[in-house]
Amino acid sequence: MLDENKRCHIAVGDAYEACLEGGATASDEELEALGCNNSVKHHDMMISDKTTSLVAIGYDGKKTQLMEKGHWLSPYDCK
Image 1 (cartoon, rainbow, N blue to C red):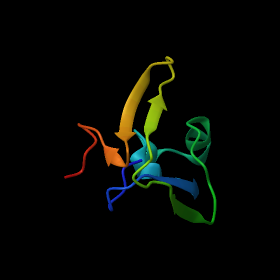
Image 2 (cartoon, one colour; image 1 turned 135 degrees about the vertical axis):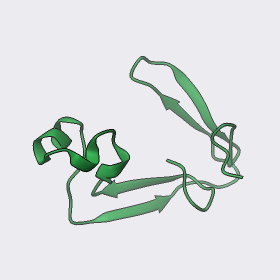
Image 3 (cartoon, helix red, strand yellow; image 1 turned 180 degrees about the vertical axis):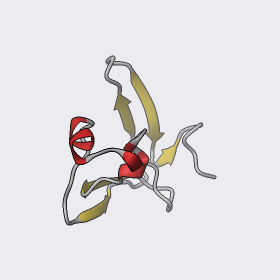
């Protein structure tokens, strides 16, 4: 997840429906089917420093390097 402060974070709790395709108009049942979490809380936890590397693994098993040594890699860099 790209963060406004150019760092990496994990968010737990309530999901932002508008970030999902069709999420802004989806019913509660449709959101649940998409895996959208429903909670009264939403909390962001920063997890990066100059040693952090981040790899995303897609549903197809493909790995994509997103961050290396605390810096987002292009096209994820928020400069």
